[in-house]
Amino acid sequence: MKKKIRFYQSINTKIVFVIVLLLVFALQLIGANFITQIERQLIANFQEDRQVQMNFLESTIMPFLEQEASDEENEIDPVQEINSLIGEFSGSGITDLQVVNEDLVVIGTSDSTQQSIVGQLSDDVDVRQALFTESTVPRQVIDPITNNRRWKVVEPVFSEGDEGQFLGAILMESNIESVYAQISQITLIFLQSSAVAIILSLILANMVSRALTKPIKEMQIQTRQIADGDYSGTLKVYGEDELGQLASLINDLSDDVAEAQESIDAERRRLNSVLTHMTDGVVATDRRGKIIIINDMGQTMLEMSEEEAIGENLLAVLKVEEEITLRTILEKQDDILINANQDGVMTILRASFSLIQRESGFISGIVCVLHDVTEQERIDEERKQFVSNVSHELRTPLTSMRSYIEALADGAWEDPELAPRFLEVTQNETDRMIRMIQDLLHLSRIDSGKSSLDLEIVDISEMVDHVLNRFEMLIHSAEYKGKDYQIEKKLLKEAVFVEVDPDRMIQVLDNIMNNAIKYSPDGGTITGRMEKRQDTVIISITDQGMGIPKADLHKIFSRFYRVDRARSRAMGGSGLGLAISKEVVEQHGGRIWAESTEGKGTTFYLSLPYVPFEEEDEWV
Image (cartoon, rainbow, N blue to C red; front, side):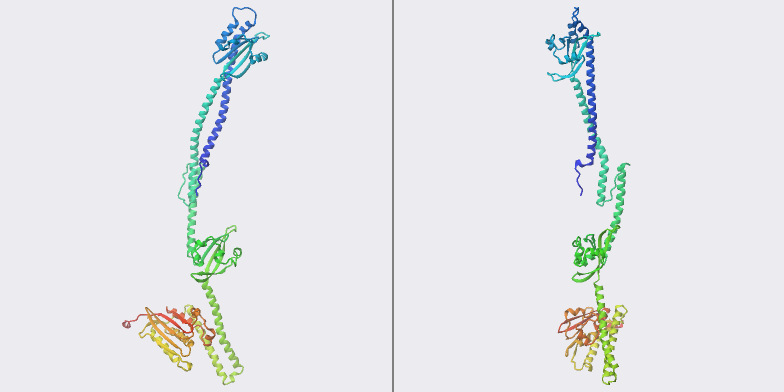
């Protein structure tokens, strides 16, 4: 946000103020010295002029004072001559002239209003001082009537003889106010000139200041634009001085910053693109563990928006703050597994940590990469379960075989009744292991993609009918003597042609029928149905057995999975039949599933895509 600069804070005002202040100080010093010198000079000139006049008067009046001091009678009256000279000399700024004789009696005055003092003893202190000191007494006095300043000079007059007899004194007062008026006029002229000089200096200082501050303001605007991300402006270079060089450097800086920002933006876009399209979640924090970046996959994995995540503690978001601390992560950076929920499905995430460090080693943040390992953990768990199941399934017949073989080795082979029965059990267990191994090999080939299908277009209705007829004969054989099973057929009457591998598909139907017979109660009915839905044919086989619990229904196609392990093992089988059936059906592009009601029975459904076939196609 731009801060408004007040008028008195502006550098322009400061420069003008400094220049004018310096000028005022200079004028003050110059004016004071100039006025003082002028005043001294004018007063000195005035005093010299009056002294010259006084010397002239002294030399003129001195003969008459000598005549007046002698007792001789002369044709010329010295007092009258003195008054005549005083009257003629009283102009030229002289306001008063008085002459006293040796007895300090006033014998003449130029002031017509003061003629009464003539013949009177002078009471002037300066006259007496001049007599006593025998020297001139000059001083400035104030006129009590007009309050004007006057210059007063008392000059003692002595005879020219060797003895230098005191003849009298001359008192002269002149108006010095005119000199001070002249000084005041000169001062006024100086002040007026100073005011004009100050005004002109204000204008000049403002012009100079603007010439200096204009480039600075342009630099200020340009740097603010650079700070706001606008690098298009270019400063005008007014000269080769320091400001011009600074403007050139700012222009170069703007270009460099623009290139650097463009590079940073490109890197940021690439980074955002990488983060957005990553299949792993990425969360970055500051040095205190507060989230500052989270990509789209991280938001999906943690089920929170970017607004909700930013600023939150990483450990709190991962819900592991009770198990580990931020210091533990900084010291060890070990991977941890956390449980998460995505769209209502529980998932397992592996959190890997990495430190963001500067070259100095200062840790400025943490990067956490979240990888969904739910499938890996599931596969690992299934692998462990698979190994456990295979070990268990193989150990059971091997243990049984070992027991019977040990019994035969201990002499049971000589018993004509036990030996054949022990050998039969051993042979059955061997066959069971062979079937299990064949099933495992079959699944292994399917998993590795090495199991190929020998596809043919067959009438699926005829195939299902063939399988049901075969099992119908089987349930009436000696193997099921004492069992009362019924097989009911609800098949399609028309031919439905499907592209399948006949051997594999018959294997699937056999597995389902075998399970139906195994788990059907005595007297139960097994029903085979078929129906067409658009381009799919659905085969279903229903039994009236004990059913499958709802919680176990989605697990029955897993390898080695049994709902009731004890009963299933007693009935035989490896627990791989449905797993193989699922893989084979999916190889054909179909789907297999089951529906069950516990205590009432189970229905297995098999859907396969079929090829619509018309009679005339046979001749194409």
